[in-house]
Length: 371
Image (tube, rainbow, N blue to C red; front, top):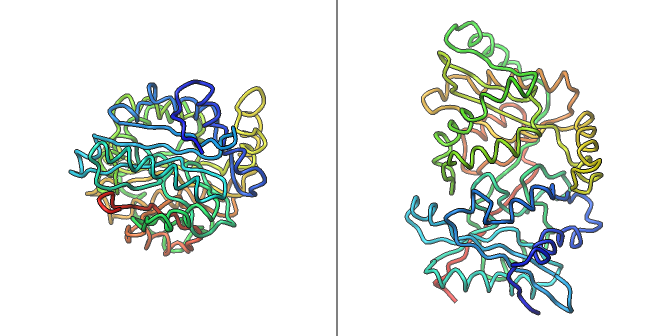
């Protein structure tokens, strides 16, 4: 087996398209949007990769790629959290532990060369990248920005000395509006200082994109490994995600004309992305947009409430409006996206709304000071 650093455009192409070969026939796997992958994995152009040490590797056996991995050392994250931790991401391989072992050992040794004391993963440049291998709920559809791996990958990690760092859970939430939601909604709606924002066009939504990301920076600081987005990162994200957003499923709250809360979701696009095979052109975007019109599930992506306004019902205020939009659309259920298992307040709210944990994702860790 040979481990090749990904340097040339041809090697990058092999790296990007390898998972489609590994997951051929894997029922619930969804290809990435390849146009995004070409930008993301060009680390000279990826804003999130700036200031990071990185390594991209292909495992080649018998003349063909059989596995891949990315190693990341974020000096920004390490300085922020006063730690010396590397990350691995985008690990994928055929069902052969020797491949995973070779890739991980190489990244671990690379991290030691930079003085790192530990490694965690799968975890990308920021919390907005996919993180955690699915360990429960393989029978369910994945959502945007989550891994859908084979069951053997987490098993390989455990056998190689990795252990649990943190788990994330995803809830499946029914679309019926809880009775107590409507009472809270009406109480807040009567106040003149709070204003519910709803949208019908992307033009209406566009002025709020940067305020939303600024609120994320403010409220996500306590999340595991989160680093604030720079202005250039905000611009990159806006350009990437605005075309995918359906304005009907973005809700926000202003207090005296200042944004203090938001939640956003998108119809599950998996059938359209599969039919497009991850390609937007020439007809892929048509397949994706068409699939969105008949999606059975709304995928929540992001949400936040400014700290001083928590516990005042704003999550219910926005949630009630979201439920009404979901019912008008005809969704059968809602996916909560990933919630930290330790985020007891959010989890309690999900469960009050009738949500059930139906997927679990795990980020692993390893002490690099141990053999």
